[in-house]
Length: 170
Image (cartoon, rainbow, N blue to C red; front, top):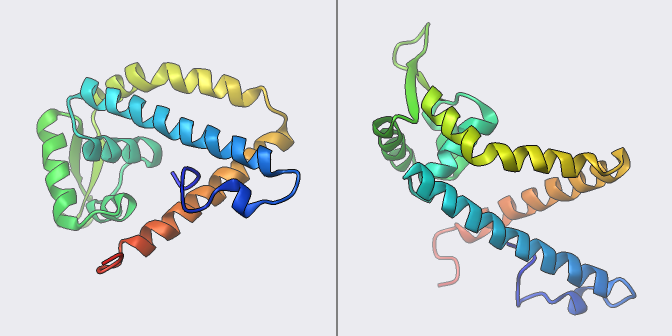
């Protein structure tokens, strides 16, 4: 996570009275990332899939049916790798390929009922309790949290692009 870095310590970035607050937010975000990774690993084991396949399932769960190309872009994977993941998940019974009604060469990938049931079992309680936690904040606080999360996501996407350039760090 971008907030867990030795390259930019909070005290080097913020020199005023807010340095301790920044440090605590950075620590909390790093700990949240670790907990998220541990939970996703447990979910992958429960679904008997690898983490890439879990990410594909998660993307379909959050965005709905997608084309293989849209999945590849969303997961930052090559089309070939995405196709292989789709094939694994199809064999596992978690996704299905639905042909386009107007162009039989095109298809969307959708979660199956079996996948939806397992997702509900694994992520449902966390989602319900998480919604309850978010609901405890005021509308203004939720707007601030959402702004922070959106900016953090964009920052991570930009830097993923930066370090994905061939020859980076060589």
